[in-house]
Length: 119
Image (cartoon, rainbow, N blue to C red; front, side, top):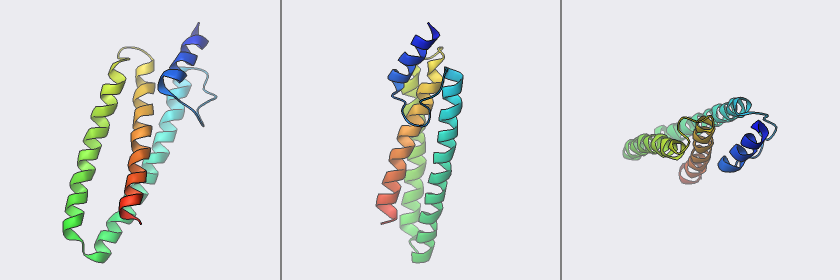
């Protein structure tokens, strides 16, 4: 029964890649957390490069607008993922759904940042 639940969990949150070998939700959460930590490190590095670019070019107004957009994106990410995982509230899959959402939204933001600011 637990393997069936894990299989359904994987289908529900569309997990694929480095976490495919997880045997239960605890292992899956651990793996997704490591993936998210790595992605967050990558996004911090990109943000740092963007901020350096603003300094080099004295783009004060663009920096202010960018900072506001980043704060808005962070709020959006947190609320969107809370909303998506609320369907599974109280169940063991809720954490997996939230992590998968954070990964997906953060990967999209990383692409947006690179395309918009590091061209």
